[in-house]
Image 1 (cartoon, helix red, strand yellow):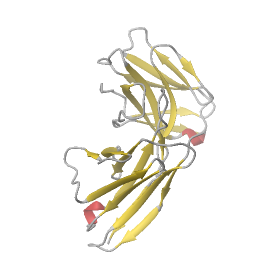
Image 2 (cartoon, rainbow over the protein chains, first blue to last red; image 1 turned 180 degrees about the vertical axis):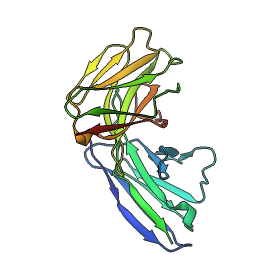
Image 3 (cartoon, rainbow over the protein chains, first blue to last red; image 1 turned 90 degrees about the vertical axis):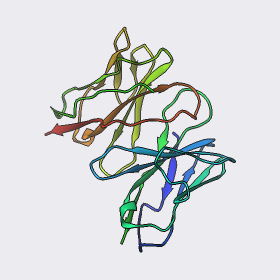
Length: 116
Length: 112
């Protein structure tokens, strides 16, 4: 079945630095990828929709200059958390779907970001 | 996308069937019902989806009422590894561009 690989699984960074998270579709091409954030004991919250070759669409309240999304190819989308602060500590998850048809999206395994 | 309502939690005994309910009374004619689950600290996993007919796969069965205002996910023989948060989501079917909006889900605890 479809596989989405997300790296790193865990990252600890210092406040003020930037962190890049990668999301790859391993056996299919993903025109669209989605980025979610999940705080402890809460549900997934959609941050943005990443479209190959075009600008990402951000959900209301998500700072586009802080969460940079790049979807340069049909198999790779990246999320960069810029100038990270402790409040950005969260579980970040990407998902993608193959082109066309009715199916369920495949999710990455998530990235646990801790900003110290 | 239409909103869904799920009880916050339920439990069942290992080996028994787990029936997880979901209400989606405002579902539109072109919206599908999807079920995902999330085991602690992992990404969500697709389980099953349907439009109006009942569906079954190797993981579960999905029963959708005739008026499509509610559905039930059935895990026929629950195991301890089925302990997870289960999300019922409705979205417009077709294509890879429509986003999934997650609610709070239902926490299923399978007891030995």
